[in-house]
Image 1: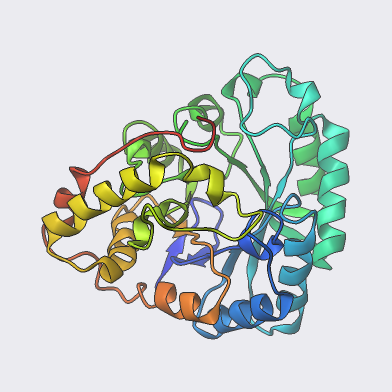
Image 2: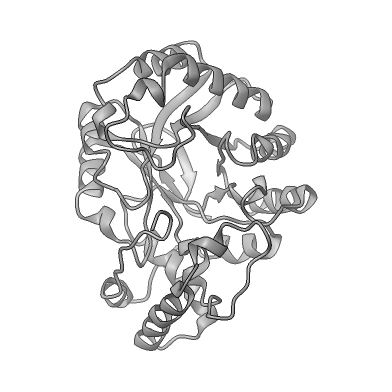
Length: 323
C-alpha cells in the first residue's frame, strides 16, 4: 500500500481508502454486517488506514460497524464521518440559509451521535455532508467546528461537495476554513481538475476522491439487461436508457485502450491516483474480493505511459443523481 499526505493535516493516509456507504445497507439492496466486518478487516490487513463513513449511512449502521472493527484493531485507522443536513436535502440548494441546514447545535449533536456510534473519543475528520459556497460567511457553523476541535472531539474538518459541482467550494477553500474536500472525480467527471484541484494545491487542502467507478458504470459490468437488488439506488441512477449510454461509453474506452471489460475498474482507479492532488480515493467495498482487487491497485506502478491522456478524451460530465 502506498500513502499520501492528507493536505496539511499532518496525517498520511492510504491512497486507497474505504468508502463505507454500502455497508450501511439502506440504499444498496441490503448489507450483511458479518461480510462487511470481514471486508473491513481484510482492507486493514492489506494496509488501508482511512475509512469514510457518515451518520446518514443506514442511520448510523455504517458507523457502528466501522467503529466495531476499528476499536478491535491495534493499527492507527483514520476515521472520517459526515454531518447530514438538518433539512435532509442532498444536494444543498442555492438560496437556502445555512441556519436551516447546518446550525451549530445540529452539528454538535450529530458529532456526538457519531462518536457514540463509533465508540471513539475523537473523530479524525468531520465533514459536512453537503455544501453551498454561499454559506462560507453565514451562520454559526464555524463556532461548532471550532468548539469541537478545541475540545478534542474532532481533529480536522472538511466538506463533501455537492455532486458534480466541484467549483462550489472555492470560496470556502480561499477562506482557509477547511482541511479537506470530498469530491466526485473519475474518468467521466474530470471537472475537478479545472478549478478545484489548483485551489486545493495552493491552500494545502486534502482531496478525498469519491465515486471513482461511477457507481459501477466504470467497472465494465453495466449493460441494458443489468438488474439491481430491490431497494438499490442504482435502479434509478441507471434508470431509463442510461445503462445503454454507459455501456456505449465504456465500449469506447475499452476499444480506445485495447483492454478487456474486466480491466476497466483497475484502469479507472489508476486514473484517479494519477492526479497528485488526490490524497485518497474511496471506492465502495462490501466484499473481501472487491477489497483485494481495489487495494492491489496501490502498487506504485501508476498508469502505463500515455493512458492518462487517452482517458482524458472520455470526459463525460452529467448528473444521474438528480436528473
